[in-house]
Image (cartoon, rainbow over all chains, first blue to last red; front, side, top):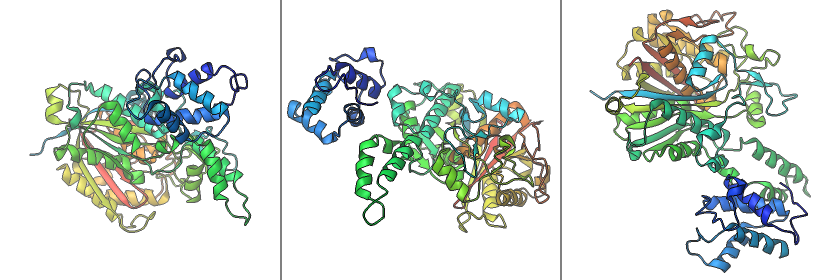
Length: 101
Length: 432
């Protein structure tokens, strides 16, 4: 998967992120909404987030250390049980944060 | 008296058939699964042939949830599919055995990158980092390219114990779980150690077998450099020819075999469809050289004798021997000698064949798939052939069931495996 110029840099990241989440968790695209919780609704486990960030790196064509994702999540939500908290929209926000940062 | 152990289900993924029925038909027909390698460009390779699992294999159909396949190497996927087929054949329901009393014992290859995608990534990273100031390998440059391009999950696919972990997850097997990595002996030894788990009282059901998938450039070139592979590239289906004077090495195969081993009392109480008894196991090591077998075949012969004793069987009880039969001159001669040493005068009356003549050498999966071949022969009343045995080696003078399958009743059979490293294992399978 390579970067899609129409989707990054101010474009609408939603379809791109939804597609990546569906690919990474091997679920049908129509099952992935912005409100879907990756763990609670879509069955993600911890290592799937490594895979997710790897796919974001490829799609956004920039280096994203995994620690950056971890920091982003921790600063925004703390360190408790986030299984219902990390939704597709959080991933989209992170992608936006990365492309703008 | 110790309780017997039943084989109640078998699953196989092989180059000559997926599932026991298809596999059994190919064994009876003498079908070769050896083809020109088409998974990568093997131009200029000394060996350009292998026995691959055909593209109609859909491993994902056996995996729940589907995303688990991302964490599976090709060999793990073979193992998971074979275990699920075996479970289905055994009719083992969720309530039939305590998950904590279900074990897994698999033969697997060592770790290391055998995944073609990972190999390609590494090769690219190597190329882009080949030049450094002093002409050597620029490791920091390699690290940058490798970390950027390697999926972080790739390493997990290379761990040798993960096939057994995936089988456990899919089969909710929470009991003993182990992996045997004795190369070409691994599948046989895993099934033997699975037998011991039940005999020791550590489990009631064991998913036992082996899986391997090594048709990749590095492994093919590696075995080729060792001089062990057939180079009969012009005639793939005639390349694997154990005990034939014109043999020139083995052919790499891939696949998996898993059997459901079950304590007799459990099998009886739930009315399980018993295919055969796993009656004996013998294991030894040559402790001699890494690839040379002892010329007097003492280690191999002792494994066979220990197996017979373990099963409380006599040489005359054995109707069929599924040979290790790789198609290297050394193995053909040593194994022939080992069988004669262990069975004595009865060796001449015993049918011996190498099913590797049809499906190649499945390495860590070989022994497991060969147990399936023995059970197929026992249930189907036939002796699988050694195909391509056109010009018998005069030094190999047993009945190798040359050319095509024969009808014949098999009440007790042995299956041998001998590995690089000198490990020898033998199993005895008996009609239930």
